[in-house]
Length: 218
Ligand SMILES: N[C@@H](CCC(=O)N[C@@H](CS)C(=O)NCC(=O)O)C(=O)O
Image (cartoon, rainbow, N blue to C red; front, top):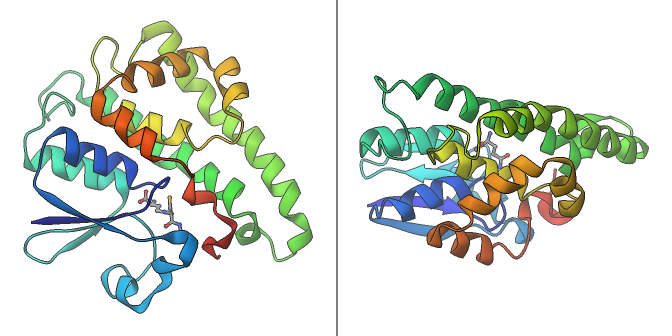
C-alpha cells in the first residue's frame, strides 16, 4: 500500500488530497514538524532531506516533491479528470501552472517562513520576511491576472490538481484578508475548490500552518 508521510499545514496537503479524492488505498504517517519529527533518525532514513512530504510506494521506492507526487499518482491511476493527460489540449497549461506554483510561488514561502536560512546575520530576518511578502505579491499576480481573464479555475471551467496546489499555497499566505482583497480571482478559485467535500475536510483539519512553525528548525 502507498504510505504518505505528512504533516498538517505543509506541502503534503496536495498529495493527500489526490490520494483521498481518487480513493487510492493509502496509509498516512503523521510527522509532526513542531516536535522535530522530520529530523528523527526514523524519518531521515526514509527521506534524508528531512522534508515533508514523502511517498513510499509498494515496492519500497520513496518519492519526494509534492508536485511530482501529484503528477505521479495522476499518471499511474489515469486521473485524467483532475490531471489532463499527455494528449489533452489542456496539458500544457496544466503543467505550466502546476510547475509555476511548485517553483516560483512555493519557493517564496521559504524566505518568509525560514528567513534565517537566507542570511548569515540573524538580525536580517525581518527584512527578509518583509521582502518575501513583496515577492509573494509579485509571484501571485500573474495567476490573479490569468484567473481574472480565464477562470474560475486554472484551466478555465475545469478543476484540476493545479487548483488544489493553489489552495494549499494560498492557505500559507500570512495575511489571508489582505490576500483575498488583493487577489479576488484567486480567492474565488480557492472558494470553489474548497466546496469539494474532501478538500473542505482537509482545510478544516489544517488548524495550523506547520510549514511556518518556529520550532521546525532550520
Ligand atoms: N519542494 C519540496 C519542499 C518540501 C518542504 O520544504 N517541505 C517543508 C514543509 S512544507 C518542510 O519539510 N520543512 C521542514 C524543513 O525545511 O526543515 C516539495 O514541494 O515537496
